[in-house]
Length: 417
Ligand SMILES: [Zn+2]
Image (cartoon, rainbow, N blue to C red; front, side, top):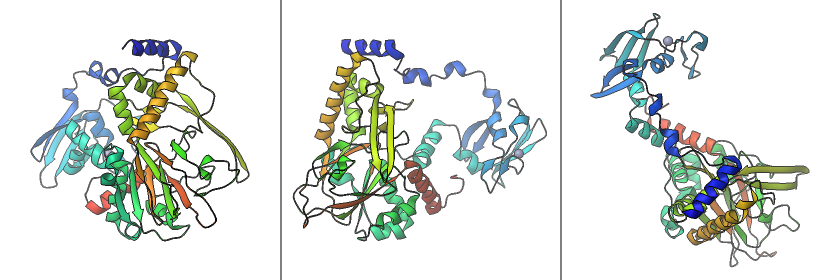
């Protein structure tokens, strides 16, 4: 613990890099006032629920307040009264709705299902978060890779909403999923992307070809061992997912994929090596890529820790790349060696926990680029033994959006939006 305290005080002294603890962030008690009279109480399907006046009034669904085809609030905020009160509340069992007359004379009607879906109970909020917002991640160790790797046929992905939904759902939960029997065409991966959303363009293009290239601008285009990394950590808006179509997989020894779930590794570090975890979640380093592609020169820099957390202390993004970390260290000199030690531990643990897997020709391997590390063992490249991959990136905004749309379509549930 002594070490932790030293490091914490150093970090605090040099720039207050440590976030306040999550407990402090989530202690809202001091904000509470006596608000019980500010809520409308309603019993829906036997459950007693409460909705704040201000929220109800702002979420009025009438034509004056809400534009149905745009699915957007159009209420005029300049006329909005934060302290509006209901003068009359009526539950209508026949229309399954709640009618509220407000003290400014406005009348609102809310469907019971619509209200229940938005209820403020922690159980309902959790259900909404996990069913609609984002499915909850499940972490994995490489030894379980064959059990967690979900596989779907290329034609089913293109032709069945249910197959596409299941595949995207598993990709979001485990951070990796496979498509098999893909058409051997350089544009096959584009058809998958079109079913989901839009490719993420980078300075390597909207698609890239991975094969052995001499004098390359990127180490991925060499046939030697490719160390575990995330792609493009130097982008502030880093691509969320990699889709790699193995048009031709090498028939020689090697060319195996290595994949490691950094959420598993980070949890392990938090539990067993808290000082190093603290360093990797707090110390910013600089990610960098400089070069020229397609006659466009680029100079990309982004500063962020290896493990980025949100205010709930959940991991939002992993950055890791030996070649694409710059030599400028933006933090204080005292943190250099501890950071290298923590980085080394993270590297070792990811190798220890990584899955080894060799994709086949016709596979599209998709994985979460801001969660997993990926790498490749060396392979022999010759004129009669080639390896050619067509890669593209897709952002999580597109994937989550498609998942939600498919969920609404497949479940045909009212009020999900
Ligand atoms: Zn209204």
